[in-house]
Length: 344
Ligand SMILES: [Mg+2]
Image 1 (cartoon, rainbow, N blue to C red):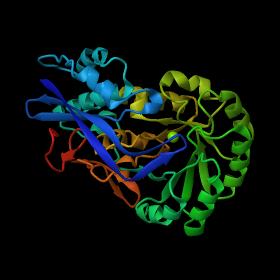
Image 2: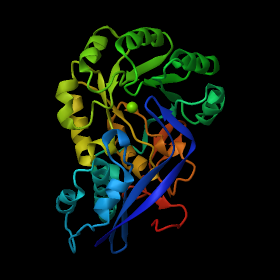
Image 3: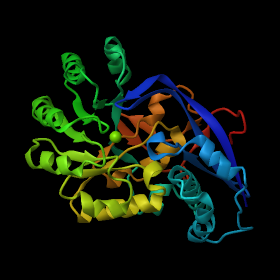
């Protein structure tokens, strides 16, 4: 058994703007566990919001990860590798999804079977309309054709209502709003009522994560459900969110493993919180890993791979807006599209 890694730049089709940043590309890291004929893969898509970067991850990987000569279980392999990852969540997520991919390939099963899930036709995913030039909105909407739900990024200084008016002039598709911590209380209160009349399903993260006081106040009057993203990192966060949010957004890059995501799903159900499954801008490796969890979740937002122009891998597909995994493919079910720069 050996472990390899490869740095890769994924370039966006269009600049990706949210309330706090705008990017044309992201640097991600692939992890490979190679064991005989098995190539198991994982992806780290580090986020500045959580103080992570490709450089930070490379500084750990270049020192070398130790691997056992052989391993009989994924638990043993994960326990062996995790302490070497310095608590970097996106790196942990990458190594953990490779461990699960390895395990499912060994058992010759698709990963979702290992979780006890059966369906290969999964819920619909939303398609993100990022913050950008208002004049290009029509083009963005055309590109979202394959998805019947839009996730619209708001939290601009002045344009939030104009963005929604322009979208509504073109389509009545269901909209999910993500303010990415960009509102103050007055703005959030007026937007919640204004949006409620415009076929909007929920509002994600209206306030900065430190502002739970206003979140609780908004929840008590908001006609729309509130979903925690930047407030919802790990299962240990969930008990503290029950009075402030109606649901949580789980992302592998934040929680650091499929195991922790499964724990969050189970606890959220117990606490009667709605479950959204989200992503960073990622290629098909990370998106497909998350897709294997999607039949257990209420709202799916796994479109990171649709927003990039040079995805090196094929994995989960979209059919009539639904995510679709192949039941005949084992593990994550990935194919490398074209060999280049150390990708395997
Ligand atoms: Mg979000």
